[in-house]
Image 1 (spheres, rainbow, N blue to C red):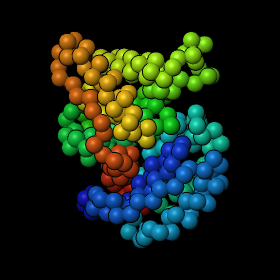
Image 2: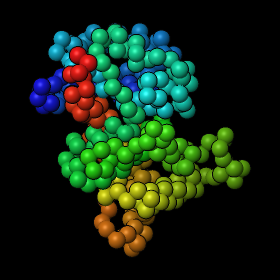
Image 3: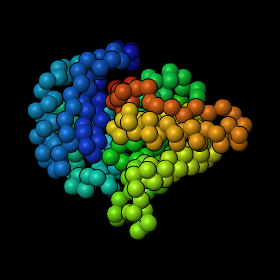
Length: 272
């Protein structure tokens, strides 16, 4: 089969929202979005209803980008935001409902691939994708591949810095007494330091920032000032040029999930 002509179902499973897309010829022909339920059985019920709007007759497989830590059997083992889904065979049930093979990676890994291929259009450059959503994480796409290991598929940044997120459970008394401007300045400093450190540790040529919390207001007030601050240091100390910018793809995980299916055509053919 020509990879450019295949049809797939691509799923972006997040702690707050789930997106379900039907791809035809590398384009989204239908996109459905719904709030992710707290219970997995409620998700299955909602999914069954939503997927009825899609013609599955020519769909080859399902690609899933999911938040949290999933094992090789596609079972959620750890999640900060979806505790009720831990150990539940969610994607086995989805595969049985659709009668289609299901491939899974973390949402930020597939976002990195989707951004590199469909946003930058140049797989020769290494790209670090940072997702600012319900969680805060990152993944590196380098030499045409997702940089990953069995034990740490993504960079888990939740406890490193979350702009504007200074909460009671992980804050000092001094931080809780900060006024809004002090919180903003601290967020800028934390994020700029994080960008600098990641630049030196991973040596990406591009850092792309996306996710549900990248609103226009947050970009203007927090993220862009942090980038500007980081770039001053990086331009003085890096030996190569680096770009740090907003994600160019609206749904990078969705596009990465479709690419995941494309890259596994031979494996899928063997099991068909």
